[in-house]
Image 1: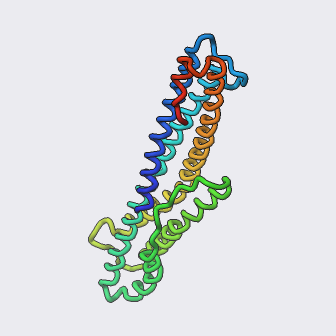
Image 2: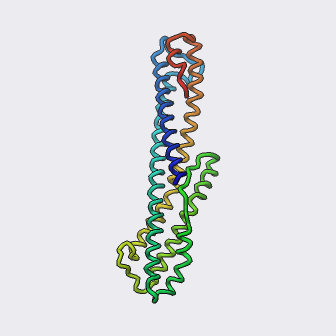
Image 3: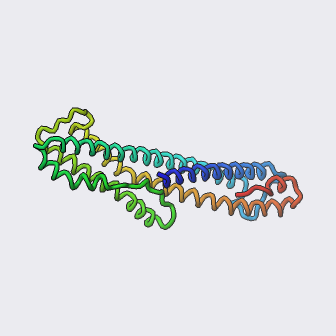
Amino acid sequence: MADFYYLARTMASTDITFADRLGRADTLSSAITLASPAFDPADASLGVANFAAFVSGLQTVNDDTNAANDIYSTAVITRMALVKDVKARALRAMRYVQSNPAWSSNAGSLKLPYNKLVDNRPKRPKLPVGGTPGEVKKAIKTGEQSFSDMASLFAKFVGGLSRVAGYVPPAPELLLAELQTLSSSFTTMNQSMAGLAETAATQVRTRQAGFADLKTKAAAIKKGVAAQYGLNSPVYTSIRGLAF
């Protein structure tokens, strides 16, 4: 749990930083737009219109990245709640079977998948963003393995319960149909997680590249402004302290 909340705090802190940097980018864009005579950099790609379009595109990337992170983080929390539910209901169902001596053979056959299920302690995965796209995909797959194993074990456990003649527990949430629905929901969620993680990781990498580009462009624009208007000019003074 600590790992996930560390990730969540890191994302929140980083998002604030990105928002600040976008604000500074807007300030820089406004400064060169209002400069007179018109800002005329040696590199045409740093011109007023081009830089404004770049900043607008970077804002979209940032928004998309925040959205992807939010969707993934919410799914992580939802799945961990499912993990708790799966384990809690499996324990109660197992105890119900064990409570009837006539089902001792069924309890014996359920013991192996049940024990493996409760011993499985999947951790909240960290979102991998470093390395090549192939390495990111591999890291995501590795992080998902314990959840896939757990889903398979629970499905096997529920299948074993279906072979217990007379298995009709008084608690409705332990009925076979309810457990089958839970098993299906858990499997479906696991199947979606890798895609959500890959989308979020890709967006993070895109944003990192975009803001690295912003830093480079901003430094060049500052130099261009200093050259065209002078180090003591109002336009340069207004942007000199902007950090990216």
